[in-house]
Each structure stands twice: as structure tokens, then as C-alpha cells.
Image 1: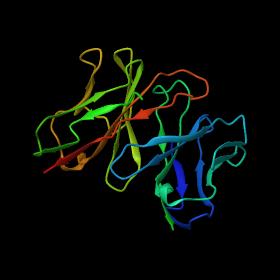
Image 2 (image 1 turned 60 degrees about the vertical axis):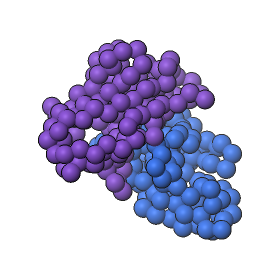
Image 3 (image 1 turned 90 degrees about the vertical axis):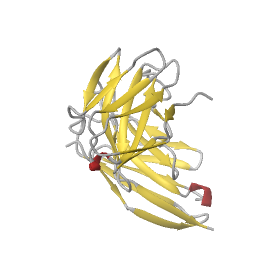
Image 4 (image 1 turned 120 degrees about the vertical axis):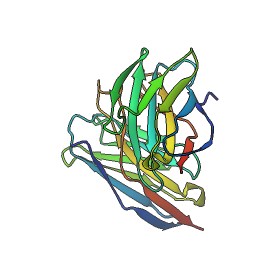
Length: 114
Length: 117
């Protein structure tokens, strides 16, 4: 119930291509879905986040698509660049519990080849 | 730009020893968290802290763990008697807890790598 399942585990994309990472959740109490980017040796950094009252959110080259009925959400990175090479984590939180403690997915290691 | 800081960056300890990991959250933030990440695995929630008390703790956060905000700036995680399986990266995070554009964005520190020998 608390899990967030993420796929794929790793992804190799050519420069300029589209990177797509998928996540699924079970707990319908989740109402906040952020994506975090993590570079080696660093802490996770918020990339983009969505609430379930919208189906898509775009910030620059990064887009979250959200399908409430399927309980799935995905991150699309358009025009992927070598600097995007990092590990990406989806996450979810629910209100009034642990002050919005984040439940993370297992992570996707993205490698963008030049 | 304000940031969460953590010390030390790397802590090596012997099994059974006590360790204290330190964090300085962003100054106007009210909510504090500890997460851990075992090498190659996902980030896991340990505990959240607000108004000088624990809001929620996960199953990982057993009696060996404690948190404290000893003064107005530091937030600490103590592990009383470390075990080999406590070896992980420990991240502190903080949030101002307000709704809006950055809905409860949690800002993470760079982490402390704990190695238990």
C-alpha cells in the first residue's frame, strides 16, 4: 500500500532523445507526486512535482504526466542532454501524515550518451 | 541560496558505538526529516520532526535511533549502538511546510555516509 513502483531501473538515451520514467502507486491517499534528481555524492534535489488535480505539468524540458485512474505518473525529459545523466526518483506523499514524509520509488539511473 | 548542511560528510565507526549525525536545516523551515539510502537502493524515510517532537517514524526508526533539536539551528540523529546494517547515506531534509507553488518542497542536505565496521 505504501510502495511506489518505478521503472525502468536504468535507461540509456542518445543526446536529443526523450527519456521516459514511469511510476505506479497503490495508495489513493497520496496527493503529491514529486520527482527528485540525484547526482553521485549529492542529496536528492526536487526537479518537478504534480498534484492529482492536473494531468500534466511542464517545466522546461521536464514534463510529468499523471493518470489518476490508473494510479500512474511518469517523467518525460525532452531533448535529453549528457548533463541530465543522474538517478531519478519518483516519490509520493499524503497529507497529515508525518508532515508529508516522502515515499520514494527505487530509482532510475539515466545515462545520456553524447 | 539557503541550503541544508550536514556534518560530518563521512563517519566511520565500530559496531556497537554511538554516533551522532548533525544537520543544520534552512533557517526559516519548521519541518525536519531524516532519510537513509543504503548503497544502490532507494531513499527511505526514517522520521519527521515538528514543533520539537516526532511527527512520524518508520519501522526502521527503532529504539536505537533518536532525534533532537538541541538549539535553534541544529537537528541531530543519534544511533545508540550501531550495527553493520546501519551503514548507509543519511540525508537530512527540511521544509517550510507551506502550500503553494512549491508544495511542501523538502530540501535535502548532501548526506553523511556512515560506515559501520
